[in-house]
Image (cartoon, rainbow, N blue to C red; front, side, top):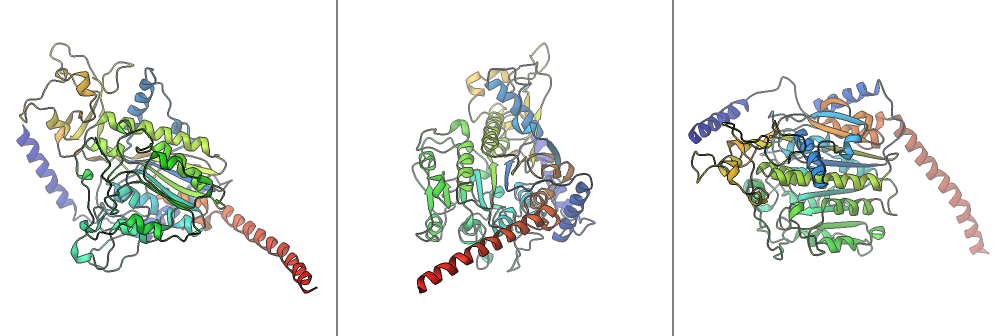
Length: 544
């Protein structure tokens, strides 16, 4: 039986290799996607016009947050509160607008996080595994990095931030500030020798290049990748999977120290390493905060050390980020990206419980953002970069444990789980001593099934589960939220943010942006005119 699966998987890879030669009938370059975005935007504007400008934008990305994840996560949230679960409400489901984003890339039907995050943040689709580049060529010595919503915001004087539960150089967060031919080039030892002379690893790009080094908030993990390994992490559960592999820099450069050295003594900058230090920040009087809370990725929420010397939750990081970005130094608004990255990591290893617990924490962080901002001036978007292949099976009864069984074994019926996976390591996990015999689910104790390393059943044995290719939801509230409705290409999200908040490539299409700029110019002129007589009077006083 296993041999058949392996042969099928081998044939699947052959098909993939053949599909790589397919050429789209469209010239899917930057100009192509720009024109698509502009045309879709014009179509939306035929039926509705903007009435307000989004001063602030908060973009939440639930990595791997498929609709099955949302539904099952909603039920788990309710059951954690002692309810049946199905009737529970998720805060962003009450947002006034819902759209569907098509997540395919220029090279694959089912995407990865590098290409999808690039599409969301830059407004341009690219090839799978590529970050921040359109039509990348590894042999070329010069490439034009795609500007992102972080670049656009900084150009307009807005404060910017990036929060993630993964390492800060992982595919999704890296797409906000870096470019790379391959998502794996996170530190110098991962970059091929032949391109090191003209290409910086993404850790260096964060610290040395715009817009990364100019962000006001950078929260996540990845000390190893930044050359600042700490040995204090103990009793950490070791998870499998390619994304868990760390990287030690060979150039021996401590990029955290280098980041801090770029600021003058007059600039308020902080580096924090744990929850206690994060909560102790003087939020009103700080310009830049770098928070790197783990050697690799942050721990799963349910496994974290919740003490002051531990890692902060996504909600705590989100709250701190908003306080810093929206402090008294904020004049022009802010743009904040928040990623719940470990939903995806848990799905990859068929850890359904951990994935849904991460979703519940994401929903808490969204509520924190709602509580701290006004929908009159802040556009909040909740979406996913791609889906996953977790399957929500029938036929569990109303109120049954969402992490339990879909049926009761009766006669010849086989017991199976409510949540299973199409692919992943859960297949071999449920066999007896690596044989073809499937271990019956009733042989697992409740303690075993609740263990962090327990894997739900999967159909095809792979080292890690694959992503899903379905459309993902885009939930939005606040100024410009009406732009994100119907079904659209994923790259359109970046352009919707551009239009709604008067930054980036289509800001000029928004008439409100023009009137806002005219007001700023008028206010500036009035200020100069009011100051000039004062200076003139002072001048004569000095002369006399």
